[in-house]
Length: 212
Image (tube, rainbow, N blue to C red; front, side):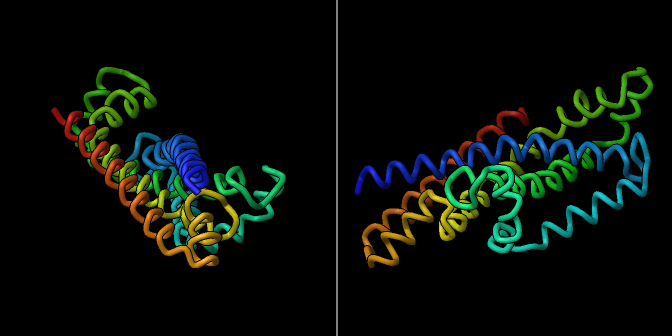
């Protein structure tokens, strides 16, 4: 049983880790597009801005458990199966990217216009303004946001386990619920609580450190 718990924990960590890395990359790209194309942005394109906003809001309104089911055809196409850790990582990445896009967009929008105008006056490119000015100044807020998303993804990974996604959620369903192993259920709950606390503490530390 100990080995089952360890294996399930590793699967959960892998799902959360991969989905956060990929989700951050995709979400940051969408956030940059939103910040650039907003009416007051460096490259105002209202149509693109509104279209991206509608797409993000539409998918964010779908509960994750339903999103997994809706994405089953895409998961089978890309991964070859709709069950298992690899299959669960795809909807987790998609969900993470949607949340992260809005979080990074909000963080970038908090940067004073004066700093952006300084960058324009210096003649640096739009990409440099975003990366070297906006991202750098907004990094503590972004880290705090990513911490919150990471905690959400830990919860989502447990949901994915209930429909064959592997990890601690799958173990809790198969052994804790279906076999009435209450002790195992309590152990899994404790592990999830510890994971969330560790992520929150790390995120708070990094955010505070970057504010100095």
